[in-house]
Image 1 (cartoon, rainbow, N blue to C red):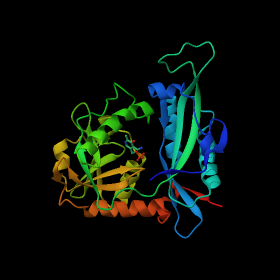
Image 2: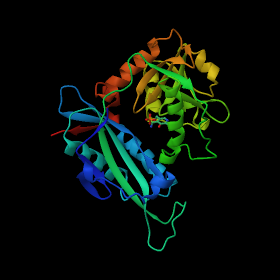
Image 3: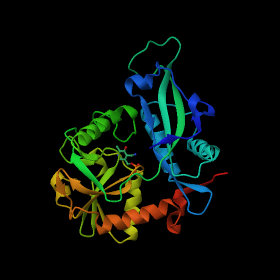
Image 4: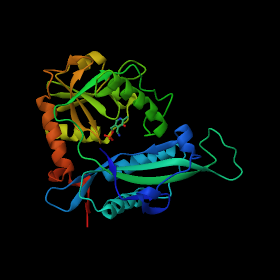
Length: 311
Ligand code: PMP
């Protein structure tokens, strides 16, 4: 269960978490005009240290999401990285942690009429953190195929992690859970596989990993990209192409990738077992390598880690 840490960065400085509050007039609350990131910091075994995974890549995506929503951040990516590092070291907890930068349309500027617009409001920035261990079940997850479609890039900028867009994801998760599943796979408006509620999806066929291309209206996940590199280390072929739901049903293995879930096997899809109905060998090996990598046990990819000593 996520527990927020003691400190937050809120608007223009560090405050105790209880003081990180916003008025109900905040525009982002009304129209979903905000953007966010999800970043993980993992405990490095035997050290009083956290390793933040691909911090700059996450913050660069955050900055791009902000630009799409005309949110002017008061900090560049390096300064944001400094805020995340300071937050983790102030909190002083050596525990797997999830960091959530959030930027939003905040207060109406003087003389501006209220309304649905990206202009006329000040921009707010908060960064909070939760203690959050790995929550991906070892035995894999069971997924529904959602009746909710992933919105197309014609309706919403799918590359941005925009808060308002996540209503779609929440509806899909709710529907899947009500039907007894753990998560949902969403199809795009062409009926091709897009992604899970907060993760990208891969199918394993023989020695190839197949994943939907960027123009399948996916979020281009950072874990997705990481798995591409790990797959190359393993000599697996990596293919981006459109997948039909039946391609997932017929795959040897299916797995999800995301900052929250890491690499998680899908063992059942729409009421059918995937492969043998248990985590397969390719997924299990990628999962193990990802696990080691984010905890600093893979020297080849050390450049992806920002190590934060925790006093
Ligand atoms: N798709 C969606 C909709 C997501 O929310 C996430 C989580 N950020 C992902 C994919 C996976 O992205 P990442 O690997 O960068 O966490």
